Length: 200
Image (cartoon, rainbow, N blue to C red; front, side):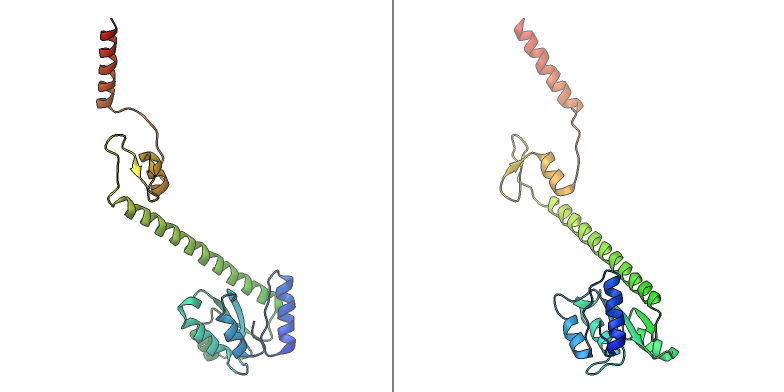
């Protein structure tokens, strides 16, 4: 959170803690911007428009110019309530725009919306990663697989031999049931009949 008004900053800090969020507060834009570039940066930031060093609109624009910060949710906080100000604020990259003095319950609702958006975004990223892993497995299965000519086992990536069904289960998520095909059935039954004939 970046807010140079000590009273407003304290209200927000106490409220965020009460709602279960950990707040880190900066009184100037430069300190806030430096923190937003760290590995421990927050996923949601409340930024005042008018601050010394670097204003909130500039911070929003800088965040949106960095691919590694693209997923951050930004709430711009300001006394500027003209339509052109709202357009400028949102156009700079803010996800939401809150006008001071704000209602604390409204702020809570807007923070919850931001956290919900971030949660959905994380779920989407996880799903994309899962699909990419599945695609990589399928691509791997399209390559040349070392297979034993006798028992039909496959040599895996760790240079160990394993059954075909185990390999496919590990790499493609396939599940198997076992049966016997007609040609193998005829061969097996023929062998059994031949053994019986020899036993007579």
